[in-house]
Length: 95
Length: 211
Image 1: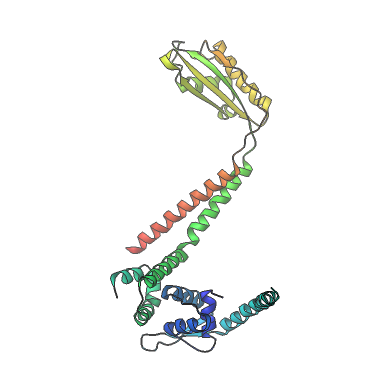
Image 2: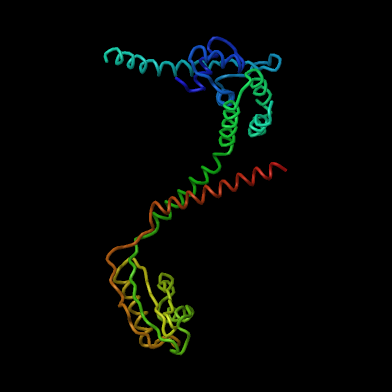
């Protein structure tokens, strides 16, 4: 699970965050360090698709929030990943 | 912020810089990035530029490929019969002139058949004679051969006023394998031309938009 867009959605699942907070959060839960260009590429795509929305800026930092559509999309993506993770875990235990 | 970073940020499309530029600058200031960060931003800018305009060249390439496919599908399989004759110099007209054969074809063949015929004139060393390779394409191999036979006969007998005393080097053959436009070449050529056209269109749009 290293798709930047999915990582951003996952990061926003527990509340609004600005860019710097997202990078720190993603590094913490996924061990992936997103570059600033990669992060804002993902933010652009997600905002265009209506999966996240920009909140009023806090000084020069603008937080982003998960929309209802974004939450639903994240749930679908995680549901799709779940059987893969389960199957892989089972196979690794058997091996 | 150093100049490489400023340059990388400027690589983004204008609308993007207006919307996200300040946020990204703030983030870069917070992170204190190095060369890897600058590269990441430049890569992001490049992707954003492609995203902005990729549909036009791709669409044009798709249209071009479709036209290429259509041309290929509509082009019939044709049989080509060829013959080679030799024309001596001083036969009453300049044998190396393709105009002479244009006239000959006009007299011997109906215009539709003449359009499907080609001829290549190659002067031999010393300029004593010219070799003429005559070819005609038709859906029926016998028809292709018959047309070339008529042309050769006219050239040999001097039916054409200016083309005379020709001798046959290679008699008109009966083709066995039809030739058709190459499918991959037609589609690739169409897609390539479309891509070039679309790219030129994008560049023109960008140039006109910059003023």
